[in-house]
Every structure is written in C-alpha cells, then in structure tokens.
Length: 460
Image 1 (cartoon, helix red, strand yellow):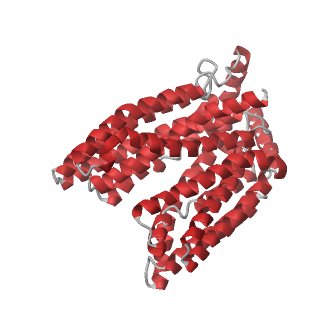
Image 2: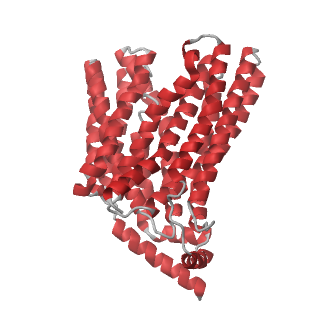
Image 3: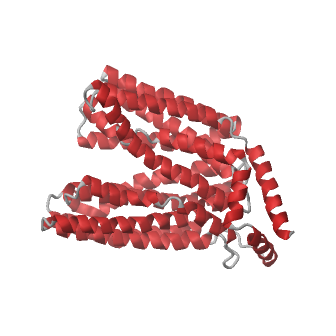
C-alpha cells in the first residue's frame, strides 16, 4: 500500500477514535457536570455511576480472544466493532434519558429516588463499559491486522491524534447541541438541551463509526478461513493463557504499561485544584488547563511517529518521553513555588507534548507485542492494564494529596500538591527506563514457540 493511501486509511480509522473521544466528553464531561452541578446529585454517587464503565475492563481480554476466533463472513474484527458501537450508542441514549429521569427526581427534592435512579444509571454504565470493550479491543487488533511494523508509528500518530481531536471537536459540537441552555439557570432549559443532544449525538457517532470501519478489514478467503478455524479449535481461552504466560515479556510489559499509565494520569485529579489553590485561578480558567495539556499531547502524539520512532526506535523514544515528562512535571512544581502562572501553563503544555511522545512509543510497542493469531487477546491484555491503571491513578492522585496534606497541615498547601507531582515525575522516569528493556524480538520468539507447542500437543 502506498504511503499516501495508507495515511488516508489511517485518517479514516481515526474517525473511530474521534468518536470515542467525543463520547468521553459527553459522558465524563457533560453528564458529570449536569448531575453534580445542575441536578444536585451527590458527587460520590455520580462518580460511582460514571466510573462503573472501568470496572468491566477485564472483559477486554475475552472480547479480544473471541475476535481472534470469529470468522463471520470471513471477518474477525468488524462484527465486534460495529456491534459494540451499536450497543454503546444505544446505551448513551439510555444513559441520557436516565440523567433526565434523575433530574425529574431532583426537581421534586426526592432524595431516595435520586439515589435509586443513580444506582440504575451505574448499571447502564456497566453495560456501556462492556460495549466499549467489545468494540475498542477488536479495533486495536484491526490496526495490527492492516499495518506492518514500519507503518505502525505513523498509524499510532494519526489514529490517536484523532482521539484527541475528537475530544476537542466533540466539546464544541456537543455544546452547540445544548444551545442556549448552556448559559441558562433554568432546569427546564437545560433538560430541553439534553433532549436535543441525546437525540442526535448517538446517531451521528454511529454513522461515523460505520464510515470508519465498513469495508476496511480484508476478508479471509475460504482456504484461510478453513485453516484459521482449524487453528482456533486448539487456541481456546485456556490455551491462550498458556501462551500469554510463556513469554516473560508479557508480564514485564503489563507491569511497565500499568506504571506508565498510572504515572501519566496521576495529575488528573489534582491539576485543576492545584490551579485554584496555588494560582487563584477561577473555575473557567482551571477547566481550560485540560485543553492546554491536551493540545500538547496531541502535538506529541502526532509528530512522534514521523520524527522520533523511525530514527530512535520505540524503546529509546519511550525513554526520551519519560525523561522529558519527568522534567516538565517538576517544572510545574517550580512554577508553583515561584507563583508564576505563565510558567505553569508553559510547563503544562510541554508536559503534554512529552507525554504524547511517551504515549506514541508505548502504543507502538503495544501493537508490536502481539501475534497474528492472537492479536485481539494480546490487545485485550494491554487494554486491561491501561484501564485499571488509569482508574487507580484517579483515585491515587486524590489519596496522595490527602496523605501529603497530613504532613503539611492542609490538603490545599503547595507542599501537598508538590508531593503528588514529585511522585508522578519519579514514576514517569522509572517507566521510561523500564520501557527501554522491552524486547519485541524475544517476545515474538517465545510466543511462536508456545503456539507451536500448544498446537502440536493438541494434534498429538
């Protein structure tokens, strides 16, 4: 495939990631804000409801393994991607209706009804998380199927840049669906805006997923289907775990990827409070901090596949990104000590760019640490590491802030925040050094040996 044609394919596939980015704005941004601020739902209940989607991340491994074995009309990934997308779009509409149902109880000051309906919303988001797993894991495996090792850095740059672009564009478009209700203090106006939003957004997102995926996956020929089905009889879920345990690199990369993801998102729970407590920034100003970090991350991810990975390799690029990320996180601390808001914003942008470099390199390694017969299974394992590590980071950031606050006498003191950022810098640096030791060649040899052993034992 020519380079220009491959870039166009990558942009098309990136539409799927852009849709996931827009959905994250809708669920974790708009729904979260409406429930807590406008509808007076307890923050703990809201966090439980929306966070339930991460609790089912373990299903990524199962869906990945099932997509490895799927042969529906010669397709492995497409049925799961489109089926999962249909499910999470439908569940987004259901979740939106339940948010309005909760709003109705809130307007009547019916606390017990708010809590009951909030718990039902948590069930919806459990199902939503399963649908995301069913779709996104086979999608990542599809990226392995349609690319070569040399093409993957570019593919990662484009596809994950589209994720960040989806967050930015999604925020703009989704707010336009809400219309004048954004500036209204009347609950009836807000509810009308939400009705417009949930009526249109899921259908648009599903249409974009179809455009992104339909016809991309090459169909297996009859002979290949027969051969693959023969192999699938041996590579059961139990056999897959045997193969996963065969290479020490699997456990090693799982641990390193978890550490990197945890360290990368440790600031998520403390960044906006830091801006408010140390720099006296208002709510709107601290909200824009995420955009500064996001634009930097977009720049880092978009350029790394073209500039760094082809020259340095994924491992050394990961080390570079980890080192720079640690330096710029410490610069955020220096900015707080100097009470310099411009330096803080500049350091945050540079941290985002460095984080984008590390992210691109780790994703390139992730897509390389797979096997053609088990790409979905391996992607599911790596997705599991990322999902739980990010959830733990959100909890860990707040817990560390409280912990360091005990020594400084106040949770909102500069030293408490500095403690969190220093732990983050150390984690990023260690993860960068550890990623340097990931050996894709050793991984491939061990997995191939285990595959041969499993298939031979079953034939005997």
